[in-house]
Image 1 (cartoon, rainbow, N blue to C red):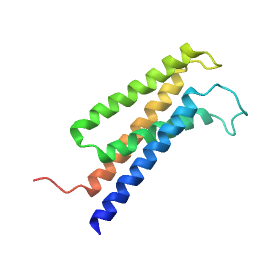
Image 2: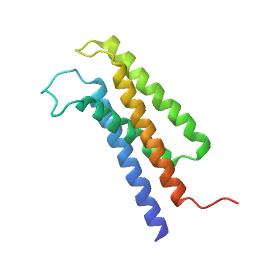
Image 3: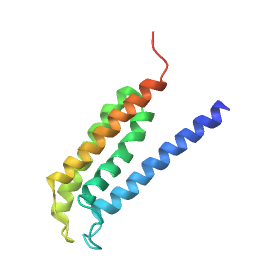
Image 4: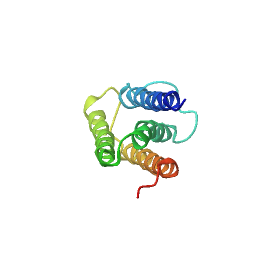
Length: 125
C-alpha cells in the first residue's frame, strides 16, 4: 500500500507543478487583452498562485541540497519574465510589483512546504 500512496503523492505534486506552469505561461506571456479583472489586484494574486504552484511541489519533493537551486531558479524566472515582458510588446510591460508577487508566492510555498516536510520527515540522529 505504501508504494501506491507514494506514487499518488508524486503524481499530485507533478499535477500541481504542471498547473502552475500552464497558469504561468498564460498569465505571464499572453497578450494583455481580455475582460477587466474580477477583483482588485487579481493579477498579483495570479502571480502568487502560479509561482506558489511552481515552487511548492519542488520544496516537498527535492532533497534539501537541491532546494536552493530551485529557489534561485524561480527567482530568476520571475525576474526574467518581467524582462521578457518589457521587450515583447503585445501590450505587455514589466512591473516590479509582479516580480514582488512572484517572490511572495515563492516565499509562501517555501515556508508552507518546509512546515509540511518538518511534520512528516523522519527525525535524523
